[in-house]
Image: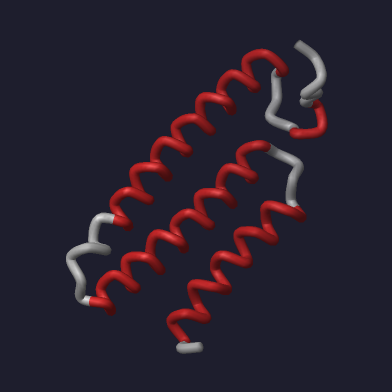
Length: 98
């Protein structure tokens, strides 16, 4: 494993660890998800550059577009949660209520 691949793997694993261990606020969970998506985007972009193929050059942009959609949906959920519950604590959210 090259140092570059190790750095991207470590970044993804740190984002995953932050998501699993620090689940107190919705905003921190969204930031960890964005860190994971950013590490995947950079790794995919570097991989497409190393292959020197035009067939794989669209994949990082597609991942970035999906990441932007995920971020906007997450922020909309954060605003809706803050308006209805008054905070963004994940412990106060009950998914069984309508």
